[in-house]
Length: 318
Length: 286
Image (cartoon, rainbow over all chains, first blue to last red):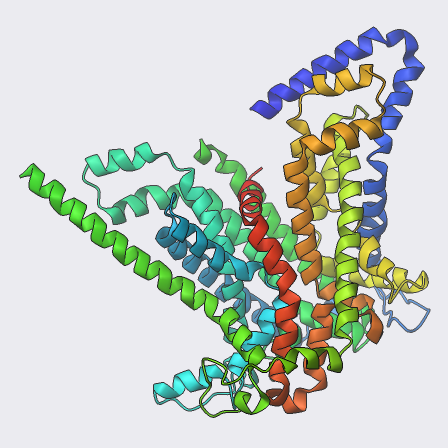
């Protein structure tokens, strides 16, 4: 609402300004160009390093280029049909979605629990604890991956020591196809829950206190208040978190590169890691570009869903 | 009856709060544990790293692990590279964004809002979509293994432009009009008037750019392959690859390298935490 008023005001002001200098038409034209010129650097950077490469990627996905050859042969949809008919593609897609699903569900569920537990304003202790929980979000993924690699180490790692207390045999966490992917998820969850918690708390603080007062006068239990007030009113925030975490999980790369290199037996060969090895180790640049486009389309669809749903739900915020 | 109920509920509330504090402390300790493990592992000797039962406090503090990090890889060089990349990215990205935000918030020209949408659309294009063509471009320009390749492609950030535009929009036009009447040009209005007024946003922006640049991995991994041009994240990952056969021996050195690599982030984060959290919470729906 305030944005609109300021917009109207600027419009009115600009109308007045245009009217007063209408005699010197050329002057205002120059002024407009000068205004525009300030946007030029940004537009140039975006054009050269974003929109042009985007178009070029689309073009490459229809060629058989291998990066070392100067010649690019147009092969039509060949890259796409080959990908779509290869079991490796569906395996990679499965790995990516499995990782994403586990990551998003755990990060959000634990983040929400943490938010409920730690949403105590006007307490220095709780503020400090929230800071500690949020910190992993800003620790570099490479460092996080290193610590967890060491904790997961089959011979000397802490985790095997801990499981031995319960009488379990040691596990090569990162070299075992059934544990490698969950091991990667754990790193991402550790890094991400603080962020989810912070956003959930921001959402909770936006809920008017009167709702809870009214509910407790009506004798609603804490749990019912949570289910009938907190949860529905948090839904725009939840949706935002689901979509953004989904999109970033789909692009998991760093932890795989550092911890498993796509293995063992391709158990962690998620799409972006596969794109990377396809382009830079196998030099199948055209094929890799086609895979890039498939990933991009998935991400676009998700963004579209978010846009449509959040538009519908905008009234929730009040 | 009612008094009883109230007294009971006050007691209950106190008990609940105690439980809550205990729960929160446990959660915080668990979340902090990997950082703790990183710290103490950085100080352990090689033989202590290979004990059957891991120790939770180093027997002796092996400070030489940190010196070793400098010996095994050109650590100081990587640190400098990372710092230069981060600072260069901040300077370029902020200035490009300041100008664009000024044009999109206060400028009057045809197609302004359409162009702004084009800028915003960049938010949904992931790095992986553009890295191959940019890599080819950089190699044609002979920019691979230079700071140009690390900094210039990140010149325009849709996120920075968006946030600064918001900040500029909230500044009253009368102030600008007055400056204009006094004969101030666009650059002096932007840098002498708007810049200080939008200072909180600019500082937060700078911190966020610093953190994401300092932690970046994918981009420097692809744009550099020369040993002298590595940044810390890539250097540490390489350190691990080079000793993969003998991991447990050297993990203390890797941990020491990692500890030094996250110090700038932890410092910046601790000082700026409030601003960062506010920026995070604000950027969600708008």
